[in-house]
Each structure stands twice: as structure tokens, then as C-alpha cells.
Length: 339
Image (cartoon, rainbow, N blue to C red; front, side, top):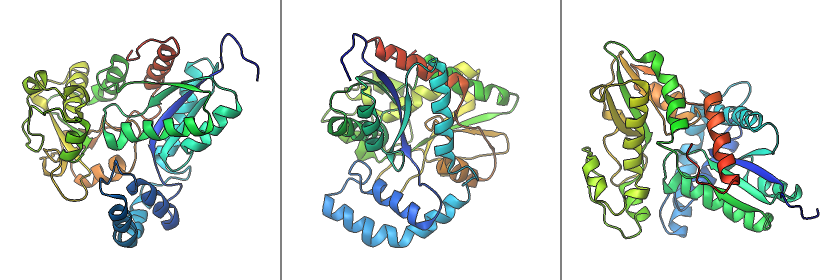
């Protein structure tokens, strides 16, 4: 394709992924890819492989498949269905002027297949929109690094610009707040539940910078973050800051919401407080703003808490799609995103 003054462009929505279906073979493939990632299971390669192949997959693949069957729909796995619907909305919000792809860190459509299509189309500029409001090595970092590697291998002429975490971006905050305003009322309390991460993960992301707090303790103080050299990429700080921004936009008083962390697996210290330990009543609205699309962790894990009302994720929200379209346009214009 000849060079042009205005190189062809594309947008890529980066998601973590989901099994193709709820069958044991598909779930086993997904778990193998997911748990073999060094940013997810931080062990030396040989130990990680032995753990996954000899312990986790034989014991957990069938159990996990049974859980995925509880959320599978006739159209497919919810995360895949919602991501495809969101892709279409973002493309429409961009006036159908540029191709919009969805790429999964684990599963399909793979980063490699999307990179090959980008090369085939002769795309020169790629706006990469990770679907992770906060920065964590097991989500944002691994998805971006994996897709960047795929571009270098299969579409080396394409230049990528990556949107930053958007946990307090106005467009995102307003989109989540819109889903909550109908729940705000007398006697309601809100539990913001984010995916948990090991404390060691925060230490690794800090890259040698000293944390000003003890992330293994349940108490959180924004004052510590002001003087913390590692605050910029601190997942815990971003979760609390995002929850506060959403609550303010939705009109939820500070004394009516809490923050906790879910989905712990494996040993060691994880972020506290734990969602499973929180008191949830019939008046509690459980919100999962760290997940932009409903998935196993929201549709099943949070529902298993019993009481309370589960607020939906953004999924294919028109307001969220418009926010992502503006992010892409900012990246193409060479500006910092966060609109």
C-alpha cells in the first residue's frame, strides 16, 4: 500500500479474555494461558509450569467449567458478548471512519490475530484502549505488553499509542455514576468491590520505590499517598480514588460507601479489606467498577455473596463507548487521553 499523508488508523479495545465456551477443554486452554503468565503467577517458569500442569488444571479445570456454565448464554460467554457489542458502539461513535478491533490477552480474538489484520490493512497508527480503569501488572500491564509484542512481530510498521488508566476520568466516572443513581436513596449503602492483587504485586510495580503505607492492612489513608514515591502506579490508591470519584458523581455520601477487594487465590498477603468479609445487607448495592464488562467475577462470585443488589457493569454502555471514542481521538491527535 503506498504511503499517504494521513496513514490509515485503527482502534483496539484490550480486554483480559474469557474461555471460548464453558466446556472443559476450552476452560482448560484458557486457564493454562492465564495462569502461565508470569505477571499472574509470579514464580520461576519451571515452578509455574509444574503448578499449572500438575496441580491446578487436573484439580480445577472441571470445577471452573461448571462455574462458567452458570453464566454462559445462548450468544456465548458474557464478557465476549459485551466486548463485541461495545466494539460496535465505539466504531459507530467514531463515525465508522476507522476499524475497531477487540483483542484478548487470553483467548480469542487473540492479540496475534488482530496484529496480523492490522498489518494486512496497512494500518500505521493504532489507538490502544485497555479496558482496565486501574493499573495492575496482572491486567493492564500484561495486556499492553502482550499486544505490543504482537504488533512488533506481525505489524512492525504500525505505531501504537496506549491510553492511560482512566479510574478518575470524567467520561468513565459519569458512565459508572449513571448506573448507580437509580439506587441512591434512604438507607442504601454501597460496597465498591475491586479485583484483589497480592501485596507483592504492588511492591514489584513500585520498582524499588518505597510504599508509604502497609497495603496488607485494611485501613487506607489518602494522606499517605501524597508523600508516597510509588503512588503514580499504585493499584490500591487508584481503586480508592476511583470509588470516591464515582460516589461523588452519583451523589453517594462518604459515610455510605466502602471499598473492598475480591477474587483472592493462592497464598501470601493480599489487599484488604476482603469483599467476602464485608457485611452485606439487603440494602447494600454491590458495585464492581474495576470490571468494565460483566464476567464470572461479577455475575457469579459477587452474586454468591447472597444479600444485596448487584449493579451491572458498564458493558456496552453508550456513554462509555462515547468516552472511549474520545480517548481514541485524543490519542490520534497526539494528545494525552482522559476525557
